Length: 296
Image (cartoon, rainbow, N blue to C red; front, side, top):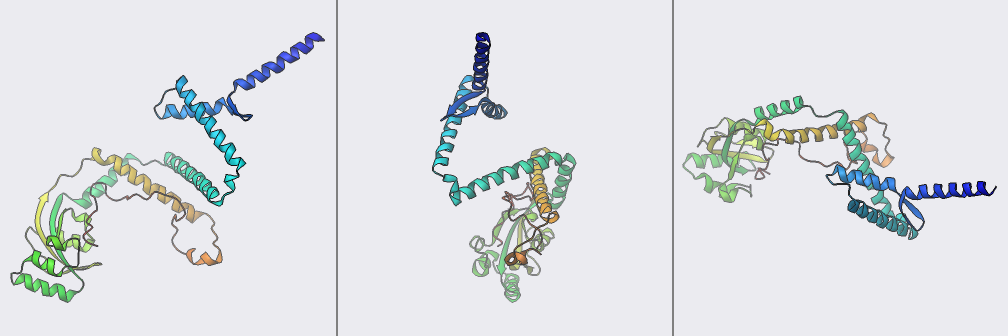
């Protein structure tokens, strides 16, 4: 009988030791399992770190600190604060969204064929020329035609730009927009510039959404187009962002969404991911900085 009791005590002690060995610490009686430490170590290794005793010690200290903060916050009912609740919900949403988009990209990655096609598309659209362009922007056609008459009579383009142009970003420089590929310009302006030669002034004012432009091409030069290898990563990133946005928009289209009465007027609008915290980075050409901010 004594032997049986001894064996039972030893068994209980062994079980308690085994449970204890599975924990790296306890904080006010709450255990921190070794499996949690192992997860952190795995993340450390994935980010280029090493599994060392010092690393595990530091991770353990961080986990203990986390547990203390969590327990103290629970005592003070910090999570009941509406602002804290919102922040926690939003953080959870962002984590889920990023994980969902990673999973979607793993299942539908951007192919080399897509990248190459986009490269060729950009190459054809941008061409191999840059133009040094000046312009005079006015609000109405009559003013533009009067300026053209002054130019035909020998007027100085830069002086007239300073006097009449409403483009405050360029007028003080005589209307100079600098060197650019035509892709930076709105289409009517780009189409006009493409058909002009060095030193030429537009034969008629060009109308755009901004007003009426008198254009002068000061110079033209050939420019090398970026190699495929030098820009393929940028193109891939842009295409991935586009696929992600399309995926989120598709969720809006293919799921049943019912708006409250006060929002009913929005329900007929094209589906957009308004509520997705999606980082909007420009998916346009990686080759040209579309920064001709003068024409605004």
